[in-house]
Each structure stands twice: as structure tokens, then as C-alpha cells.
Length: 114
Length: 114
Image 1 (cartoon, each protein chain N blue to C red):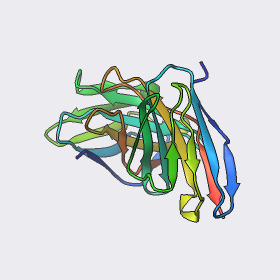
Image 2 (image 1 turned 90 degrees about the vertical axis):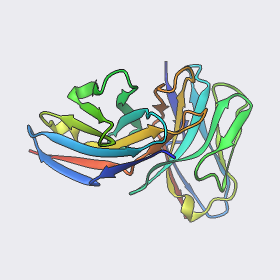
Image 3 (image 1 turned 90 degrees about the horizontal axis):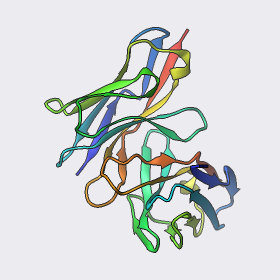
């Protein structure tokens, strides 16, 4: 199993550009989510999905879109990048069979918006 | 609502010394608590989790944590620090409701001095 994979690892954008951060998992997990990590703030939830075709907003959803057409993939789209979106983005996945299920994280995408 | 507070954004210990990283939680329901570790430029890896089965939880790499309901704490300890333990550590609590979302603390950066 590759686990949770994310591409790209690094990205530099100019203000106003759009892009998609890719996330894929090969563990057949129902639950997938996106977090952003900023210094001194821990990780904050952007969007999540409890299964194909079902998504919902997290704590900091503004400026981001998601969709979940398959169980494996959960891309995160930045519609019009802003410097405030400079961050490290992590995708995570887990089963939903128990409340204590472990979330598995990808290696992250480091995004800089100029 | 669920939340966690990590006391001390930076902790420095000598190699061989006790490691103690503090986490206090707030939860309106019996909590599910997690400790994750993040090594430089990597994703998050689960160290251990509390699922109400036992108050003393043992994790990987010699770490353990004790759930104390009366103190609303879930502190992470390791008897003897190794240089390889230098990393950032995050405490997290499962959010309420039907999702698996995690609510993270702000993290503690552990430095290990030779």
C-alpha cells in the first residue's frame, strides 16, 4: 500500500492563479479530509468527505473547493490564490467504523502564494 | 465543543532525560484523544491514541500517555529522550458528531540536546 499520496510536494503561485492539490489513498477509506498547517496554529480542517459524492466544510473553507467523485481521490482546488493561503496542506484518510479510527496523513504540499 | 491546549510551544531536554509534553482537553462527550508526531518536512504519524479501553496508553518509540479525567489531561511522556525524538508533537481530540474530524492543539516542538 502506498497509503496517502499528495502531489505536488512544492508549489509557488502568483496571486489570483488557480490550482488543484491532488490527494489519493489506496486503503479504501470512506473518510478523507484536508488540513492546513500554519506556524503556531496547529492543523485546521478545511473540507472533509464521508464518502464518494459527499463533502462538507470544515473550520476554514473559504477560498477552497473540493469534490469526491471516487473513494480514492479527494482533490482540493484553490479558486483564486491569495497570500493568506501560503501554508502546508495535508490530506488525511480513515475508515468510519469506529470513533477511535486512526487518521493517516499524506506527506504534505508546501504552497507559497506571491 | 471539543478543544485541546498544549502548554509550551518549545520544550528542550537533554539526551537521556525525561520527556513530558502537556495536553489538556475540553470535551462535552467522552473524548477520543490522539498524539501525533511530525518529523521535519514530513507528514504526521500516529504515536498513540486513547479509546477509553485503558487510561495508560503505550505507543510507538517508547512513548506513553495517561488519561486523567479529573485533570482533563492527556500528557505524553518518555523516560529517556533520544536525539531521534526531536520533532513537533501534536495532541488532538476527535470532534463531535458523525465525522472523524480531528481538532488539533498548536503543537510542541521538542529539541533534544546532546
